[in-house]
Image 1 (spheres, rainbow, N blue to C red):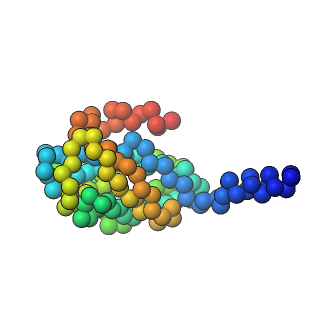
Image 2 (tube, helix red, strand yellow):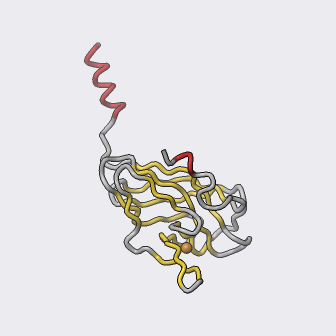
Image 3 (spheres, helix red, strand yellow):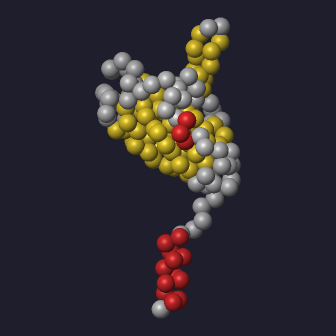
Length: 152
Ligand SMILES: [Cu+2]
């Protein structure tokens, strides 16, 4: 009997994953109704012991998804496609927030409004694919205003 319990414990614990990713506070903005693009914001916490990297994304409601950075150059706000993705050092949290990095949904195939939930698949170099449900929330406040609780 004791051996059976030991075996069960091992099954429940499963293989130890080298990369553990936690996505928190994900939401999307689509700008004006009917806009062809949307942006996804979230906090990604790499809880693993190994560095990882967000290398891509996809969604069933968009023809393509890209990882973007936001930059201000000559007073003009531009978005840059981060072709190499975003590094996620072990044990660290990365904020994808307004005015910063984000996942851009390009060529929306559905009309999205507040409260809609869209599936977004994040592709990590080590952790593989992680699909999260992202709520459309155009009313959401400014960057950082409600994120501080997760910094500790
Ligand atoms: Cu963008």
